[in-house]
Length: 314
Ligand SMILES: NCc1[nH]cc(CCC(=O)O)c1CC(=O)O
Image (cartoon, rainbow, N blue to C red; front, top):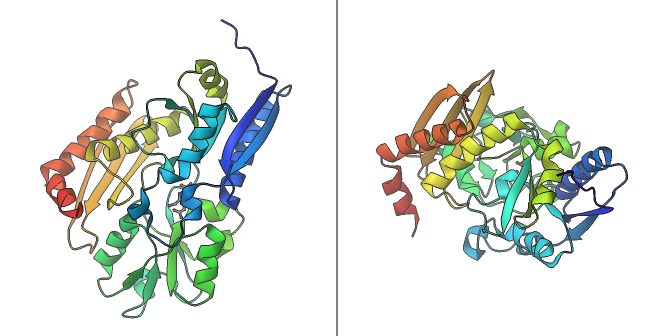
């Protein structure tokens, strides 16, 4: 059956500068793919953007950033939603699917500080800004003396808090700074051994309604098969371990030729215990990424990851 190209496509997006960059990127790709189609943006404010005073974990987690966008898909106000893949819960509500994962950019974390070049240079008792337990546990494993304070808000807000002197350094995903032409704020890209990233970090995902398979087909030219394999492996680790944004859990995969390597860790927030596992194998068939992800998750469970995660639940 031939694909019928619609006259209009509406992209639902959050209104932050980074979200708009991402949505405009997808808009340009779709416009190039379908020159006759009018591709526009529907900018929405989400609960995750509005609630800045309380920790996200307490008010309902990362799903808050995508719910308003999903509502726009249900109402037909939009045809697709663009998300940072990292913000898309691993268990999607059954009405929706990830139609395409785009080529992944930089996936590592960035060290941002005007005073100190890296973690090792920090003076005793220095104050680091991050609201990510994943980042906190890995930093504190290396520097138990540092003080970690929460840091929320969009990128510009976070940088302003650093510049106002609230922190000695902050940790951000490098990709966001790069996309907003703020690369000069990156003192160093933190090596994977020091800060293993979150599942999906650096990649964009396009979400559509499952009931509109033609929409999913229209998105296929934007999909990157290699980034999809990587993301599937990483997201499987989180899914098997029941990861949420309140879990100190990292999952990162690399694909070199046809060899996929999956690294993962689960930790206590104080970084006193860090369980690590990895696995490598060829992506010989479509199930291989998920099998490798599941294998790494199982290796963590064999080390007691379930007990560690259960302790964190209260
Ligand atoms: N935690 C929130 C979040 N969700 C997505 C990004 C941008 C990075 C990405 O697209 O992977 C960020 C900011 C950050 O981690 O610094």
